[in-house]
Image 1 (cartoon, rainbow, N blue to C red):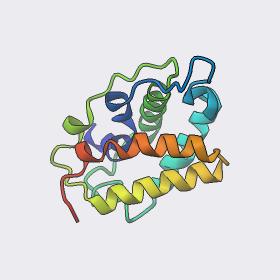
Image 2 (cartoon, rainbow, N blue to C red):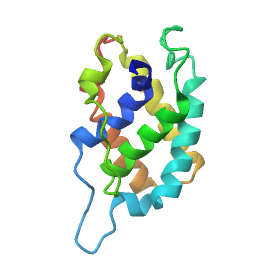
Image 3 (cartoon, rainbow, N blue to C red):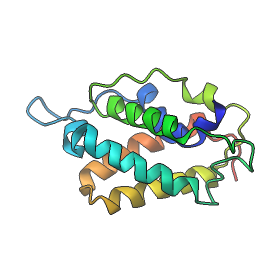
Length: 150
């Protein structure tokens, strides 16, 4: 299960660190502005696929997590983002610090994951305001995930 953590790390800690996003009572939640469950599911599918093959991410932790259940990972990441952006799903996974202890995720690997997320959001033409909001939430998780400064 630790294998789920490399990508989930970036996104799943949103649930721990973020309240549902609402700018004003008349403004839609980030979940709604992103397009709801179908849009988030599509973005996560593409994002995880991209991250899994990016050697800068070290998704499988040098082969340690070759048997990773990617389908389950995508469901976890989706539930996490839905909750963190104000949607109806409830993420029930581990907190990010616990999930990533001993994985030795570097700042560079975290940056590569963030880059893949940004590129995926661009691919899906997510508007700048929503992209920036989601990226800021993701960035807030770095302190709980990164164990190696380089």
